[in-house]
Image (cartoon, rainbow, N blue to C red):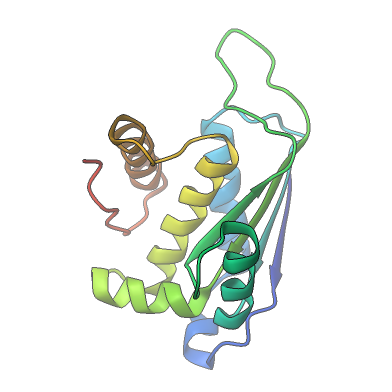
Length: 162
């Protein structure tokens, strides 16, 4: 798998110290393996500042202000099935705002790194077609998210599935 981590966030030293790019790549690889994404699939995770993600949020989602994570799928890959070869292609791009993650992680009581783990997992699920607009979709996505984070050993405490 090709996983590229680009840190373009202009963050404080305290936030930057908590973010280990190799750790994020390991998490992304773990999630993609568990969901049977093709071994040659490509993913880019870009860490950006709040003004950048606010601009992207308005431009692509029509929402004002910063958000924590945005997912931009490319080849519309889906999780692989046990009895078939997964489709090869580009999974897409994730934009994560560490400054927003730091605030959310503090509120949730699990810190910045755990929050970035949660947002990375959440974003990859979006890239694979999962959504949480409807209650049944939310239950499926958030349960899978919690299971993946637990299996990885994350200390993140995801929001409830329902």
